[in-house]
Length: 462
Image (cartoon, rainbow, N blue to C red; front, top):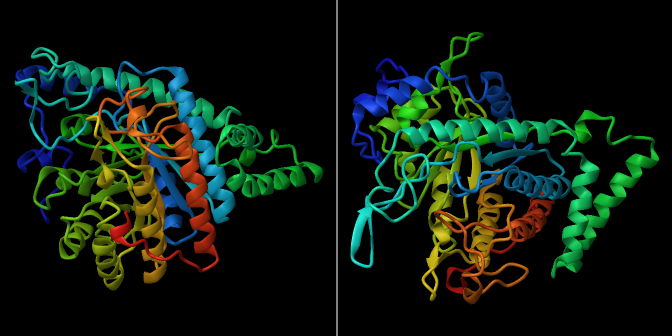
């Protein structure tokens, strides 16, 4: 790709997963309006995240990326934002202590509105309508009017993202993220968890460490490192018109940045080498992600890496594997070997959600907790065998007490799914399942640190 890049050069390429807006002028007017709005994030913040991810690529940190499958306008509120942030902080503390490395915290939040779909239409009771593509595009209500793509929704998504970011920044720097408070929340979780005995040892060690710091005269409130935290946002950059409108030049460097989020990623359905999404991503300087599924061949992956990270810059590119617990052992090792052979510097992350979606007997889409964990275990085992760093996890999760994924400490079953199934798209780990997963990943991090690995789970036993 030697052609000159501009923020709009993607428009000369084929683009998949594009909504069919009935009024092209209305869409252009909204995009022009968005281009006059302030950026949601700043280039310096994106550079800081890239630097942190560079440490992940070097094996000196771990990436925790998580949040809603798709944000919704209806569920936007301070309590939901707070509860999500609180759970992610608890997970990060557990992983930091177990892995003895910094945890880079990135939310699927403040921009995760658009969703790719496997079919442009869906049928219910014999009625066929356009698919729901996320609140930034159309409405989830199953009516003809609701499913018409409306560009005005992009303005609502921008405003909601700005409000969410404002609150998250306050939480991250205003004392809410105090390490002592986060640990007290953790102890509250353990008190109510059926697995409390299993996790008590790690929690007690964290308590001892905090008590030791206090005994040495360290005031947790007085030290910025202990009362505040770095937190970044991310989303799948599906609507390229919206992203183009939010693409700004950095006055200090002259480089172009996507200011819709600190990190954006390319989905497994839109990673075609000669298409618009790759064209757009190659020109921005943000840290970016690439979802890698079973259909991606190692040679094709190397070509994508050459285009997306031609300078082999540490922290620039995160490869997010989404294979499924029964396929990760077949596909991930070959990818790792190809990337390692060519000397490419990447962050390896595991999305154990998308490849493990099933339809329950009651008709709900769900994800078994055991399969999610199995893919994460395989991810760590494979990297240990290949001599590479299992760099992070990418989870669809919420701070709410939903019943969408089966299993976990409370053994949610098919019969429980109807109790609190609230997702507008794919099933998410609830708050308790998310923290439960963090403790289990912590055990894997400890094993990695000790130079050990668990045996590879057999596909037949999944």
